[in-house]
Length: 296
Image (cartoon, rainbow, N blue to C red; front, side, top):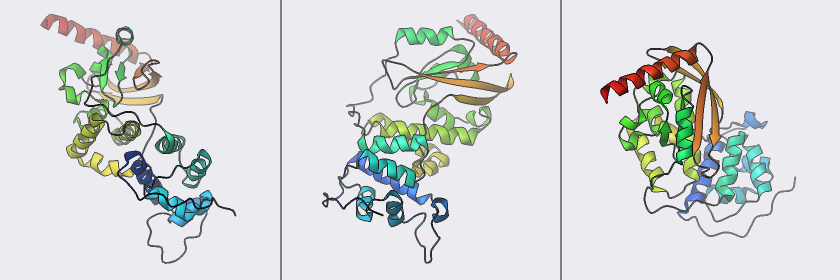
């Protein structure tokens, strides 16, 4: 079977973050596969965890040298055809395949000089409020909660009352003690939240806001520190959410995710519940609003 010819030997690896992120991602996907997963015999004297480099290269019909350069973070520029072949060889899910292409070919976002506050348009903020009693919030580029209506604050947490550095859906999911009881499927939710954050972080190489949150998440608990090196990525999508509220009990919600057109990093996430749960959420919102008015 023909393979892609070896390219000219590129420069040695450098600290270039996109190339390093691509190398780490390829190694992590290779390590999770076994020969039987891709139709190869197990062989003997196998000391490598997962597939060998030459096995991935053979499955993708590229040279082992070229694949090794990719895993070393060398200055090579794989074509879309090579990336598609690698995605198939490594059995990548659609979100992982898109992430692979972005790491290899995407234009990195410029690193800001510091953590700039994200601006939410007044129209989007007003829409979030109008969607009560359907729980709705808007997240920014690193999943900071930029706005949340009364229903979302009643079911998750009262975001404006938290310290600014904790107004983040990933932080709340992985670190807040109440998240472990509020989210019925906590571990799956936490793994998914970190995988979505990983995909976002790799779209913003060099952004100190991401670096700070990664550091704090990994220091805050053993789960994030153990899961982060796995390089799992996923996309934020519509689906189902199961909550356990101390007053309302178990809630099954339908989630819809919308992208803000003029600010693509901002996502509006809204949830709906079937009757009678929607009416009970509305009652909870009315009680919370009345209590807030009495205290003002």
